[in-house]
Image 1: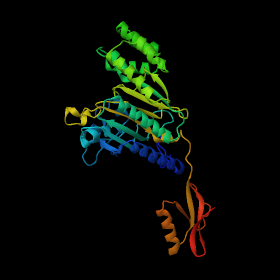
Image 2: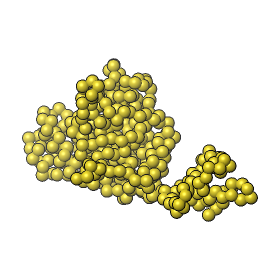
Image 3: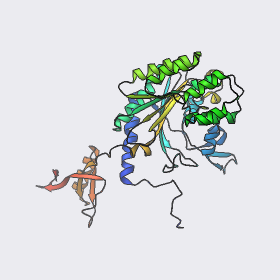
Image 4: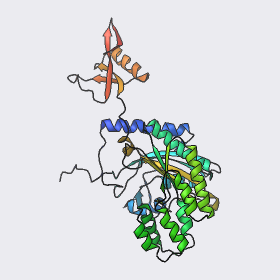
Length: 386
């Protein structure tokens, strides 16, 4: 095998796609800044215990590990940026009030999330720390939708759920961790027969409610059915009320509900959402509420702050949105004459893209639309339309 062949699910990004990704990155980060989010840049590499603190086994299995040649300690290449941003909020910024943070950078996965996925997503996300109310949940949803609109995603659909519903049903039951994981897997897969097997010894009311969840997905009528079929515990009642409130506040965006899908149940503490579009086979955005995610990084108990946010993979997003037009540019001849160099420099200072045509390569311009040319007329260098 040739030495330059890349590992499976790792790929170079060539000029056209790279340009599109970078323009989306700038556009989406500018959108977040317009909502008041501050940009942070966590490192790609951290001590393993810091990188995996509080994140659970799933992220551990997705993390590449290596030995630091300076300290001898185990280090990891981040598989998710959210825990790092939580560390920044809790340990470095240490603010008392609301903190809004955004980020964008590569993450590395030991395995791809799906058969044709990359192991090097370019993760962009946003988080709000310090506010437990629905206002923060709504804001991150609105920001995610604004970013998708800026990227020209057509007719997104928001799928809403709440981790508290299943957690409330299982609360107080002596369920082994592996069985609990299997229950969540069966719920997410809508596997009623497997769920019946796993809950055979459960209280009849809880078992009936868990089996009812398998069918509780679809439009807003799901919330009415849930209210009739699920126990009226405080957590479930509040969850259904809040899901209805959120759906009403992001209208006219199409909203669906899936009360059984508790993916990330060990991570999310409340609302969870995913945003889909007909152009993509999987969710473009995933997020939700994960209160207390930064508690392990704080020096005091009060650092167990409420948190809500989302993330997306720009490499996945770029494949699902229309290609952006080439940037208009000016074609200029190559030359070392002072007046020509000054004319080119002046145009670039004005924000123009000027492509100098090297001798013998007059037709080679790929990633720019040269609709004008720098030509000499009456002893002056002027720009003319082509």
